[in-house]
Amino acid sequence: MTGVWRERIVPGTPEVFVAWQEGVGDRTLLAVHGGPDWDHSYLRDPLHRLDHRVLMPDLRGCGRSGRVPEYHPDDVVQDLVRVLDAFGVERADVLGHSYGGMVAQRFAITHPARVRSLVVSGSSVLPVPPDAFAGWAERDEVLARQEDPWRRGDLTPEECVRAEAFAAAQANIRRAEALPGYLARLEQVRFGADWVRQLHAGNLVSPRTADAARRIAELGIPVLLVHGRQDMTFPVSLVEPTLALIPRARAVVLEEAGHMLHVDDPDGYLRAVREFLERAALEGGLELGSAGTV
Image: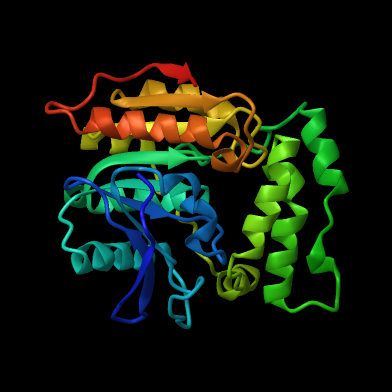
């Protein structure tokens, strides 16, 4: 099913912009984008092909959502509650990509009654060790070539965030043939700089939740870790130890995919998410715990 995207503003402080499409049945997927300072739009394809109703909010301070003086991940979680309430959704399947993956975990841990299942996409449950990428020469070479727009003195913070996204494209996309489409996708993103200003000020709180693996395991919900083997932001090496800590988790690793795995391998990504959601909908849940490869 390919739905028609609609737009809605959820009132409150701040207002939250939501792109959404109707689905078949009563299941809703709440998709949380990364960045931050990006909008939701880079995640639409291929999730728009799901049969679920799909809700894609712009996080506060991002895209077409409202701005506030200061940002905290707990406030973002409350915004997600408001979004579900506005759409009359009691429980949702929740997917988060990159930074959004950590927000999604935080949401599940703090509001377990609102979450049916959890998809951690191109992110991690466990903290990333300082030496996680040690010895990966290809990554070192790619990052060494990457321009740092923050060293320039002629760009606004918003322009720096946008330029950084384009500069990081070679690191985030594995397949050369996927790069032009990804760059075109970035052209449509409404970049901001509210979050990065607070980061540079030194008072931005991490969205990562302490002891997240144990706390997610205690929820007893189905969990999918979907990851690109070539991810240069969140190491694939954290997938296996996470499975050992969360009995109801399974993993799908896309071999020729980087951090933007949904762009590198949209069909494999969609298949992994769709099959997980279908199994999560079965009465009695899932029997999970082993890693697989699409």
